[in-house]
Length: 602
Image (cartoon, rainbow, N blue to C red; front, side):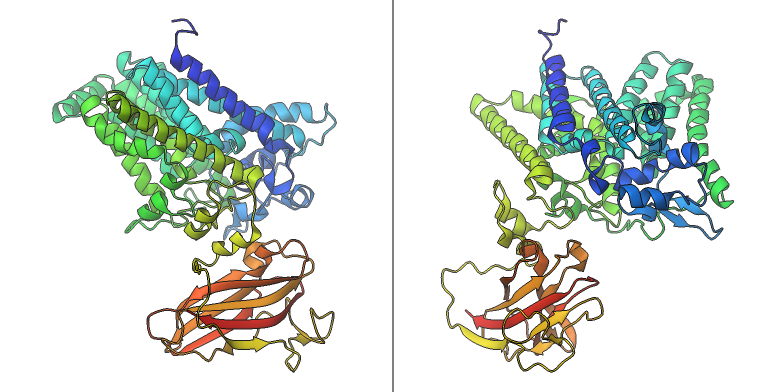
């Protein structure tokens, strides 16, 4: 079939063009500094094996890291490793991703000094090599996914699947801009694994068996939970007890090949065990320390629908895949048990992780590697939609187009647009910014406070507290550069809390409270967790009944002086005390506050 007559081939190249444009022209991370660089944050943690072993010859003490951290500032630094009881440092992440990086690291290391850069593992050639390698791996995975899907769907449907996944889901983010994360590389491993499984059951050779074993083992030492990859070659094409019996017979007849697959998988996993033994003297080490799973109940609702990182909130296109997965039972009955079972297990494991939002994630990044399986559900839905009457089919096209627009918009806002605030998104804030391109600093208060008074006019307005701190005799009152008058309240590294000011309000006396103050921080505190809080807290029997707050530095530009307010709804439940106070959680900046005011209204 010629290129022109193959819609799926054309779709592949269009998708490849988008990935290339995003990675190379729109937001090239190898050109970004410090924690925005390609080798930063989690990527630097997976990557540490390579410079540690091949450049600095130090995988136990990581004494070289301090110099790299000071020079490049790639992120959390030694937080990507922990000190074992043996006294040695152990990598937090397994080595599978480092092994995938190895060819690109090697090329960069050979070229670094020739190009005038330090051969230290983190200079520009390494950033470029890992970025371009990740892009090529993404294209490879997409190509193999196309090959796999063509076994089961028409060329037109395959084309639609590729466009929907690349243009309409967070795969775009993790295959292009942040392609050095594990999810992109695992997506490719899974695509090749499915392809190899299909080939093995057509022609069971030692070569295909060895490749399957290597891929399963490699996925496992990239992210240990990916040991579920073994589900694919074991159960592919089985949908009945008779099919299961036939598979057992087949595996028995090909026992030497199956043994080879197991040996190859075991050899890959042994590499990780050998590293742990070398670094600690122990064969098994739980390197994630205090991060673990909550199996009952998992965070499924949050993973699917939360504003913070909900999979179907940020990639609504994949809702079609979820629905279509149930349609597979009729359309592709031989594939249904494996595809459905794998996707459900993957979703369950993703949801059971305590840090279910997975750090700085645009939607659920931990779902991306499973997209080669979810693609079957998406294909089944598209097949069903093609059979609808024209008007219903048109509705699907409109919805799919909206999902694509939304995904492109979110991808832009996560980088150049700036309206996506990683790890901190709330439903209230999302609804404020959805579809916009201009920034409104006042909207940022809804990252902390979900209450919003939407009335046009406040009724029964009365001031119940006003403090200008002119008569304040506490240690917090300062005459050093006050905001107004002769005194302001000042918080700093040694002064974390203001007094808790009790508000003269009782149950049923108002429906809303508005707290406001004048604020200045010079210089501005940029670390979110260190920002100053203005807090209104409702108490019942010395327990917090409700709390509303805003982080003040969110709402100012630089060191400007600004009047800031937020509204909080008075709880209907009975309370016996209300306080307002400031909290400065760890900032070493000098923060000045003035004209604290609280108003009650209906």
